[in-house]
Amino acid sequence: MKIIQITDTHLVQSGITVNGVDPERQLRAVISDILAKHADADLLVITGDLCNDGEPAAYALLKEIIAPVPFEVRLLLGNHDARAPFIDAFPDHPRDANGFIQSFIDTPHGRLIFLDSHEKGVIGGIFGEDRMAFAEEALAGAGELPATIFIHHPPMDCGIAHFDRIGMHDDGRLMRRLAAHAPGLRQIVFGHIHVPMTGVSAEGVPYSSGQACAHRFITDLDKPDPLWTGGNPCYRILLLDEQGFRAYAAEAGQTVTGQAPICEGP
Image (tube, rainbow, N blue to C red):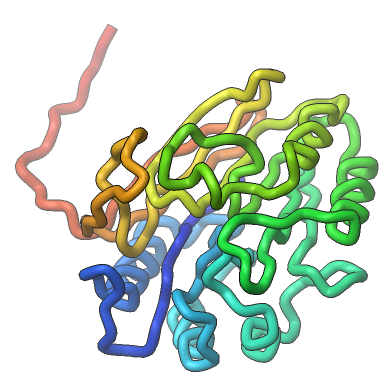
């Protein structure tokens, strides 16, 4: 199974930049690249901060940009999003019984579970009893294969000073529940931190983030006020198959400097 992950698109109205980057231009370039190279993908997941200010016009722009995608799409909410305008723009997007943007997809390689950590007025993530009810049911019915989790806020400490106070505000509850899932987890896939990251929790759970599609940080783990920068529009290719889980970073618009020869081996 091929899954495309885009994260932190931060769309605003056309012609407006955010932290020196045009998020519409970035996302259009990414979608164009995906359509050209990965039309055979099975799923697109955008892991939150879809829009920068939660504006209806920005969600309408998002809907227009991703309309040509020929495969299934799952959208997650981040702290910059707004629930009501999102639902107005995407009324048929899957929700749980409590109205949160949570769902799952069963695949031959395990269940994919999509979780909602957005809370109005909170920069960090919230995952209370009302959301945990869905997570419990989704995990309980996931079968004997490891599950794969998608969420905006990392449910663990990411070790970056800027995010010390804006991570997941649940005292580690969600992470403990995920780590206790008996068949295990293939990966926790998230966004929020605007830099690529991979790790393994103390309990042995693997996790990773994608690079932000829009503006991103110059990586500085100890700086509480890091510097913004731009870069090529980017996304990740996630493969889930009999070999397990693999993630590949991809960029649109790279400068070609040559072509490697075919390596015959051994």
